[in-house]
Image (cartoon, rainbow, N blue to C red; front, side, top):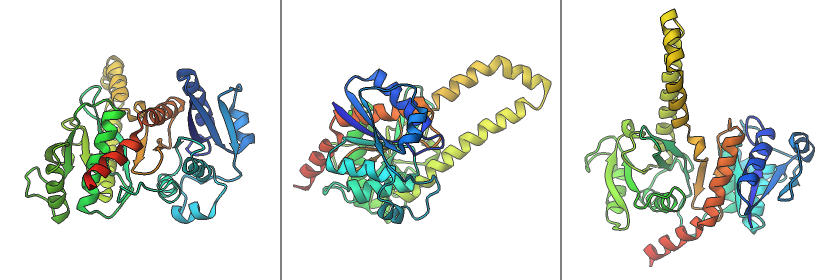
Length: 334
């Protein structure tokens, strides 16, 4: 039985969506147990029924979504739901952690408590982004776990993201692109140029070269490798642009009678596009390179999105992604 710890107090709509998502996941998968970490009284208020594979681990504390100095908070708030879940993942009492809580706090908890694999220089946050190609997604690795960049970090990001794409997303030979300011091999600074050499020298990787940020959701590659600083900026720029375009369309359509009539006829198309661009259908962002799977669901996740994050954690454990990352990097280092 796969044991998944769910931070019930993390997220904009906690603990209700966490409880509902857990119940949906238990209906969907018979091989999981879910442990809800959080304030028992509040969890029970949201729980319409009990379940023999759903257990509550009472925690007196929780992090706010805007937690200040996350590393310090993780060290000092020992009974916070996110901290307790990560502690149990460290000891092996549970197999994976899912949280819609503050990203900085979860990265800190994963790094400081669950701890990185000794074969990994720096953990990487790897969200799965939708693309304009239906049914195709792109992993961005790293999206903010490590702000400083070194060529070796980017090379390892390519390795660990490739394993994840194969084992969880089912991509047989994931194509990898390196985020850069141009597609030519000579583009970028020393970081990008040296990373290019390391990645291209590994015959086990299907490296297609540099990719510009304008092509991030084109579906040209399965993995975009970046340092955490550039990756986080690029990801938020894409998210912001997509959100602004939808707002502009709505503003223009609702600005006239003819536009409103057109919106009625096009409502099915807009609904389809919205569903197609919804990354929560795949799950959350996984923190790769640590000793147990830690999944970051979006803060505004609904119950279906939480269920998908739990599904993602289950699949990561089933496919032993952590073990395969260790093996792949050990063989490279020997």
